[in-house]
Image 1: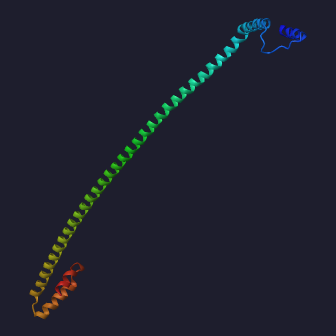
Image 2: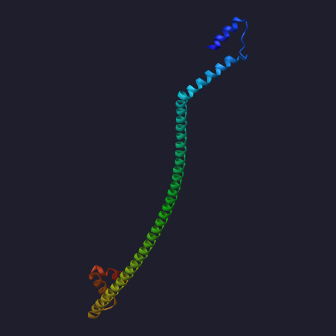
Image 3: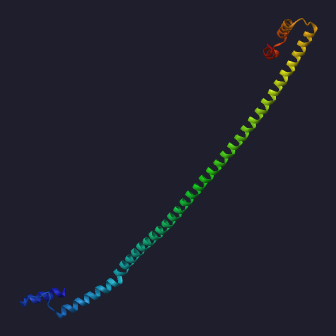
Length: 188
């Protein structure tokens, strides 16, 4: 306000005031008003403004700290999960390798058992065939002896001539049951 008065008085004196001109009275009152306003602002306005600024700064810093902590935690968890995944892959490969070995072992055991059973069956079959052959040969021998004895008994009982002997043997063979059919073919 004083400033306005001073300008009015200066206009009256036909003196044009300069903005850059130095007026000691105006400068004094300007400084007094500035410091008074500064003191009022310092007392009443700056504490809430600075408090708000500090609170905002704290919130921002807390958010940055929380973000950094969360990022570090996420990196740690990611590294842990990667390690667990690698461990799981390793275990899976070990399980697969063990399963392949077990399967190969079972396969080899089954093949060995099958070969052993096959050899046992072949051996038994050969033994059975040999026994049956021996029994058949023995049976044929017995029947041949029986046939020869029967034929001899009939020949001795009525011996006429070779043709009659032949006829008697043929007749005897015709009367013998089917079990001697192999012997009949051999004698004729």
